Image (tube, rainbow, N blue to C red; front, side, top):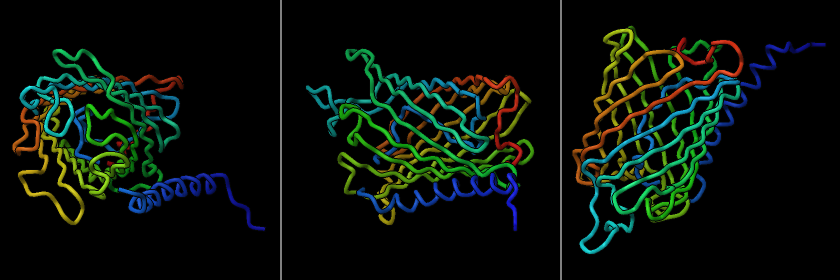
Length: 291
């Protein structure tokens, strides 16, 4: 009788889990038809995942210095949501590592603006898997799916779903990442739009062991097969700095410029993150070795 070793069984389970997520990508197109990315978590994802028995706690902060304005005599913009101009967004992201190739993240979004105080905006949940290191792929590859709710006062779409493929690569001091995200709305004004394409990308260079500088790009082109004209697309360019002070810390600062009419024109953002390892060792299970 042919016996299957535990190692083969583990690899089969890993492959099955990754395949299941790519099957979810296909099912994504079969459900009923997300608006453009909101400015709560402004980040280009890398392919690595948080290690098991490890928790990543992040604070995403940004201030819109020049954004959407309310209609005259109203507290809302033309689409019935609160304006983003001079709004401060604070988002908490908690990510728990499940296995050496999977994690789940949870978001709490808040917004504050003069005259409105601090308000809860919504919550999202985000499971993610990546190609295991044992596969020895030349690129870092992972797949994230995110579903959640945002209050109507802050978004024209309240229930949304995003699927985000992630590809990245480290070449010497250079780092490249691409997130060609696909989005749908379950409830709101964009339900009839179908699948929308919102690509993110990042290129950076390690100037020193501590300081990395680069450019991040965020966009929403509109529905697949029928992109909006440039005037109505959302495009943001963020010159950004990453500080590599410790493997346990994530520190990112950036200033975003939106050149199109549909985009907030000036945003300042920061991300402060801290890993907490409950396993008693320092192996964070990242995919850096495959990048």
